[in-house]
Image (cartoon, rainbow, N blue to C red):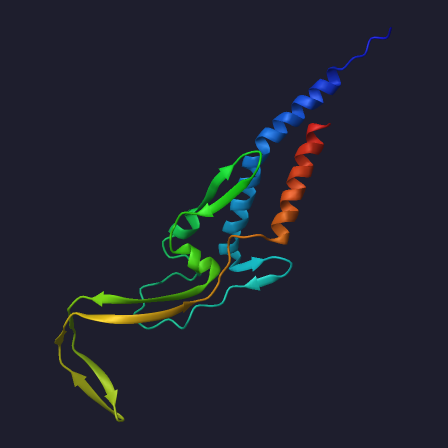
Length: 178
C-alpha cells in the first residue's frame, strides 16, 4: 500500500476557501470604485463611452460653483456604498434619495410653496429702454414646477465592470492555486 501526501492538496483547498470568503467584499469594493470613477470621467462606460449631458447654461447668480457634474458637496458621490456582500450576491447602491433620478433620468413635477420675500431694487429692459424697479415685497404663493433631469448613469451593469470583476476573480483563484 502506497502512502499519498495530500498536504499540497489541502493547502490549495484552504487557499481557495479563503479566496472564496474574501471575494464578495473585493467585488463590492471594485464595483464601488468603478461607480466613483464615473464622477471623475463624467461619462458612463459600457461597450462604448457615453459622456454625461452637460448642464444647462448657468444663470448669473447660480449658487452651484462646482465644475464637476453631480458634485457640489460630494454627498451623492460619498453615498455610493456596499449594501450587501455575501457568497450569493453583491449589491451596491446609493443611500442619497435624489441620486436615483440623476442615475435613471426622469421628470420632477410638483407644486411648491414659496415664502414671502422682499425683492431688491434692480433694473430691467422693457421695450428697448432700461427702467429701475424699486424694492418691493412679493407675497407667498405656489409655484408649479416640471423639470426634466437627464440620465447621468454612475451605477448599473456595464461590460467593462464585468470584465474587471472577471479578471479579479480569475486572479484570486489563480493565486490561490499557486
